[in-house]
Image (cartoon, rainbow, N blue to C red):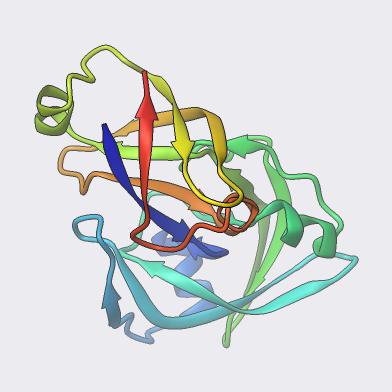
Length: 186
C-alpha cells in the first residue's frame, strides 16, 4: 500500500504562555496551510540557541498548542551541541534544553526533540487501509538510494491527511522529496 511523503524541516510549536513572551500581541498569520487539517506555516520566526551555537529563522507553526516544542534533525543537533531524544510530538518531558528567542523575549526550557517517523492516520483511514490495531510499520523506498525505513509510527488524529512525515535527514538519505510515493510494509 502506497503513502505520499511529507518532509519536515526544523520548526517550533508554541503554547500560549511562551507565544506571549516571544511575540507579545503580534498576530500569527497563515502563510501556507499544511496538509494536516488546521496546521499551517506562520509568518513568524525565532532563533533557537544553546551555549554552543544558534540557528536563526526557524519557522513557528500554528495553531497555538498546549505545549512548546522545537523539532530539529540530528544534523541540527550537531550544530547546536545537543543530543535530543527521538519522540512523538508533545512528548517533551526530559527532552533537550533550548532557548527560543523572539522579537520581545526568550524562553529557556526542555523542548527539543527529533520527531519520530510517522504516518498520519485517523479512524477512517485505518479502516480503509486495513491498519486497525497496528502501531508501527516499515516503509520501502524505491530509487537509486532506495531502502527500508523501520519503526514508522502510525500517528492517530481526530482528522488526518494520510501522509508519511520524515525529517530532512531521513529524506535526504533516500533522495526523497515532498509528494514522492513509498510502499508500506506490514
